[in-house]
Length: 133
Image (cartoon, rainbow, N blue to C red; front, side, top):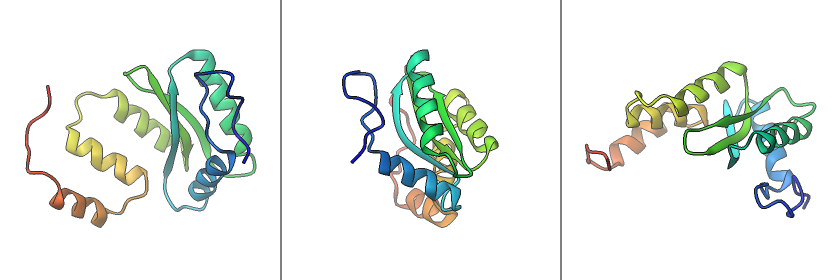
């Protein structure tokens, strides 16, 4: 199996190329609006390298490769069906005003879960109505 990059760099992800290619393929075919293939440190050079690698792997597919930094020092990497999907996801991970249950639902929809699957998950979930903070 081919890897995205050499293991010599401890900050570089060790994602199999066929796994990443399949994620791009499924987004391009409309199976899901977005696929996250992994996360990396939010280091400018590392994010640039990751974005370039994802763009190269997805050549020929109708997808948007993305690297979206979060507030915890990491960035999510993957593919989206359209730029607005990346924009919505970037807003979601940066906005602290979104109630947690709504954030999970939006994330689920973006990752391709149906409304029924999200409803079933909610109904079978915990009845806890408090946060850890």
